[in-house]
Image (cartoon, rainbow, N blue to C red; front, side):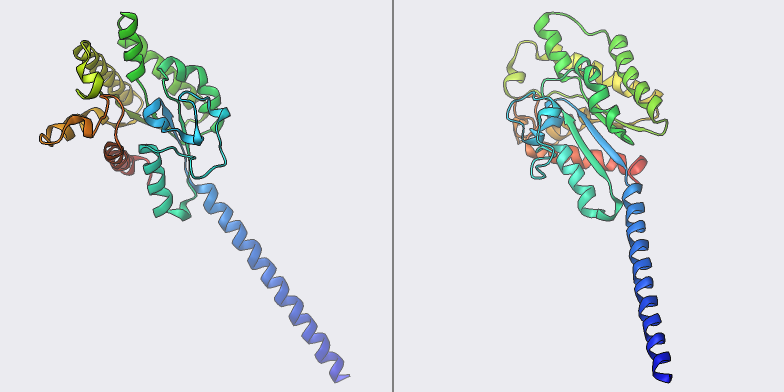
Length: 267
């Protein structure tokens, strides 16, 4: 009789131990889900400067739904966006952040508007970083026309409004377009006009950012100051063709983005 009681007691203890382990496992899983759910969802969208051939793109303007979304070796491309996302993912793996690159080479603000639903709103991001404008200027110069800053700004505002209508807590990071007197762009006869138009769009971006309490990342000032402070180094070391950054400048851009966003958004 005594032995039977001991056996029953032992069985009960084993079952209790298994139950406790099962409960502990469930708790750990739930906690891990909570941690992942807490992470911000961060979208980078724009033109070739953001694109960086993400998704192993073989053609310069490949639509996002035709790119490889599973190849983690190429998921972010090779520019400032990749450096920025890598920074957060490497230093804060427990935060559970999600990053997307939706830059597409050759895009203008009109192109962004055309794919805003699919490439922005459908992802339901918490943070949207936009860098756009250089192709707007390039097309305007080729067509011999000007850009209406009020109309351009109103279009940018429409995109932000749509994002806020979906998620009232969404935050914006607006990056200013830039150009440098380097490479073929610096040698072109329309450089001064290009510079004027880029500067104008940069001011529009700043004005819109003020209205939407967005974080501004002044890439235009970064490029100008970097070239000015390194007089012995050719401008093409930083912006190889006058428009597209080299790896060195992409690194500086990522550093500036992180510093700006850390203060206001990513913490």
